[in-house]
Amino acid sequence: MVCDLCGKAYPDNGLEIQKVCICSDCEREIIAAQVSDPDYSLWIERVKKIWERFFSIETPLSEEPIK
Image 1 (spheres, helix red, strand yellow):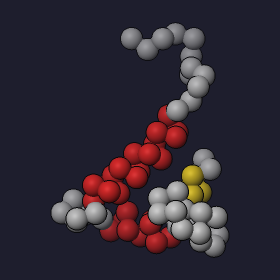
Image 2: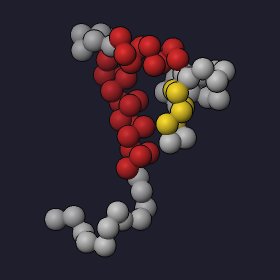
Image 3: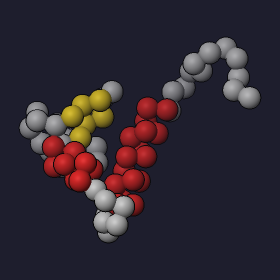
């Protein structure tokens, strides 16, 4: 498997959520991240990219448009 956050290959000891893979090293870094950490904004951007995958659904969830 390849981590979608750091791009490194890892064995099967990470997370897989909706075909998004996160290695255990990145998982630990995210859990331990503090707002004051220099890499905090980098982690936020990487996690946003994962959320974008979840919300990039091409078909609407209902027939009614969101107002």
